[in-house]
Image 1 (cartoon, rainbow over the protein chains, first blue to last red):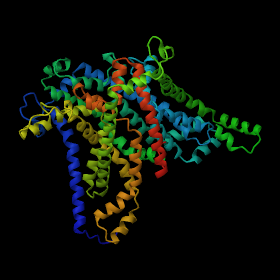
Image 2 (tube, chains in turn yellow, brown):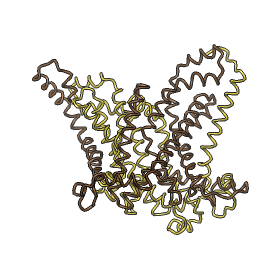
Image 3 (tube, rainbow over the protein chains, first blue to last red):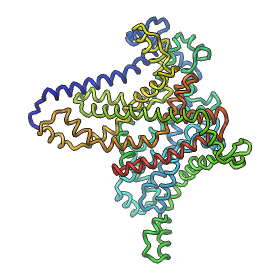
Image 4 (cartoon, helix red, strand yellow):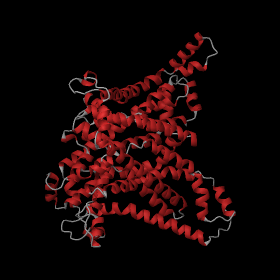
Length: 294
Length: 317
């Protein structure tokens, strides 16, 4: 850079344009979230428009919606189911994805090309809903939480990202371990995995986000109301217009139904908001690996 | 395996196969390790492909996949000749092209604005907030949209009422529904789509900008003649990859947002497959439509990846 940076008039206008654009983008992104947050704290005796609600001072906020949800048996049960799906799903997905990605990353492996074609074909050729539905019901997964995460436990995309990461680990490290007489399994466990914590965390969270958010598999395969995860309950709450148990619960909780809906949306989003900073740290790297290197 | 063998064409066949065998034995623990994943893959990815033969059968649940009678292309012709065929294709393409037209340029705009912003706090705040909605499900998005769009208490309708207008039921009105789909998708995904452009911008050689400044180019000209041309290959790549998935118009989103009054403008191939297959139990028909979509999708993805490789030496796989 030049030692003296003199901003011309058009440069200053450019900088102002950038800042104003980002401020407008900020408002567009922030207002929907803020209006949901304030809606969830709206007290029962609130009178006014949604605009008034957004500027309601925090000391007039009510926790009634959250209290009635957290005290609701089906909400607690659904949250527990969602956490089970989240953790069981991540464990299963990583156990299935890692060996496949590792095998694909070994350049000298006989049959590597064949294995590659084997995983790419279903990735390119998606046969759709019904053939998968027939398989999952045939396997007896109906009314098992595994029905939510098992069909998506190996994502080809995630496998390829992980493979690229493994390929980036210096060959000498593996070679020196092999010379010391370590088996391929030991190389994976002792050398590769300890170096792969960041990618495991990232890929694990990628899977976790998907399993946590899934409502379609849950809707198809989990009919037992005791097994329903949060997105299904949330969907029922959001679609209810006044005649079911959630509205009755709200009558006891002394919160308006809109507040209950907004609060349930935010509670269901919290785990993702907690996981998000961890993912954000790595996902730029991950996205680049997946799309640029391949 | 064939490739490994043919590489050593010059050697006598006996030694050839023994070396291959030695290679295989040396990696036996890898095969063993990967075998569970491979079996999983065979079951969960290849059995559905096998099951898709019911597209050519009159599927009866009791007779199973292989026991149902063959009916040739009847399911396909039923679909192509049905009243909904044109409507479904039109809606599907409208939504995926519409999303592409809105979200890719807004992602590029966002990425360039973030890249050019000198105010660190503003940049980091917008960046964090913009990536975030990608991680929210469409169920949660529906809840957020209700807070904005609900005719009785939504923010947008309160503003309309404030100016003396009549509240609009955005999600059940055929005129507004497509816009809600397109704009809510842009709100949710533009930030995420911007990541790849941000990464590409980071790779621009700073000396280009220095040279331009010495030459007297102003900031607008630098964006026009350096920044945008530098990320052009990435822009082309993203467009091409999106073309490969043109028949995926966003099932989860439409499924959460649509309802009977807006089916004519909301129904896409995937939502129709769901209703025909799992609500009306017309498994054969639904599978045929899925296969139709799958084959076209395969060709599009394959071609778009080939083009991407040709233009920019990179690809998805």
